[in-house]
Length: 566
Ligand code: ARG
Image (tube, rainbow, N blue to C red):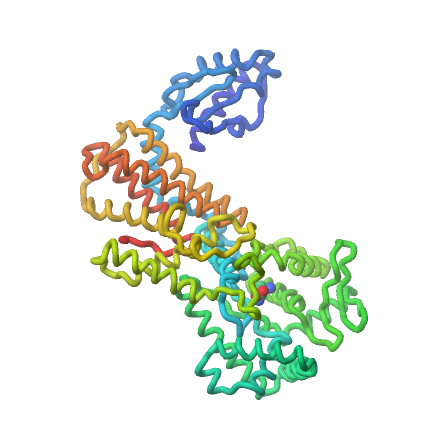
């Protein structure tokens, strides 16, 4: 489409220049009419009136005369009420399809060549179970990583595990009082969650427990061997559970350097902050004032000298810059942490690092359950394990009913069940707050992940049936409107990829995939494919192959599995 636009713009520019008028960016003036009755492209001529001292209808008529027959891609030009409407020719569509089919990896690009992007996502706090609240960062982060990879960047997926902080003091106290290595081994992360809940309840009645927990954390921070070993076992148990979920989602990280990794690196950063005159002691705590930027101060050291989440993030950013020399470092977390990131990005900037501008927070809306905040402590959570299990079981049941002979039923059910959940998490735009509803999460009908996977499988099945055929040329074929509509849509894929990347917005890909499915299914129902012959058959099979390529890439980008057969 862009080449036709350029050609039209050039010709219009020449026409205007011959009359002594100069107009910038004519290609940008070309509109895509909502209804193709008004052409595939339309040029409003109002903008040229002043320069030409002529009414728009007259300009449109003169332009029509000048441009008619000038481009093979344009079949007809109409001048209507000051608009110049262009109707694309069959040659445009056959050439466009040919170009897409011949592309090495249509949709991808090399815009990121030579640039490294760090993506910090998922990053759960260990000893807590994965619940639906973690779905946003995990699915969005995974998709963004795929998008950056697809555009030629070198990516570093980082799981900044929440594996340090005062909560580990509480856990160690609780563990020593009410649990044992055997129980933890037996019950895994569940035991850790239970003793943590018990600690919170008991500490309410007996606040001295909190002092004990603080002391325990201080002991851990001083690297006491016994405490370190207990903490290490909590971490291993938690990671084991998380890895199962990541495997199901097909997500891999390049680094699991969590908060604890920065323990021995923070002193130098605190020193640097002090040397740069940024640290102020306020009521015993060391802070960086951010009043000039309308933000509360960033607390770097607590009264007792212990470090905080922000101290570790500042240290991590500098470490990552030194080790990966990133072009961008992206953090995917709920919008609830926006202030934290704004504060600490500012501190890095004040430290004199001009690359602070390359730190990017990608926030997403909060998730509630039953209209209330998610809270592990009150039990108002839905565990990802349960959610995936339900979705997979449902997919399995449907497959059993509809296609009991399918070769690998369980793998397909897993792909569809997990796909439904992931697609649901990405479809509606990341910033929207959502309320979790079981029926919606488990819906396979309408605009859902399984619908995309099903359409992909439909295209795959048609291609299997025509495998090995010699294809005729389709250069002289005149596509029907269902076909030209689909070609036009598919041509937009590279632009959609770049938009999704630029906006850090996976829903651009999800919605595009839905549009392609709708257009492909319309084409499938209205045009015979396997029963057609000659040029029509060649065109339709190529269109099917290109649709499969594009839908397959969309599934890959969204972090869903491809289903060759459902
Ligand atoms: N562990 C944090 C949480 O669960 C998310 C960490 C995000 N990454 C970061 N570098 N702060 O909320």
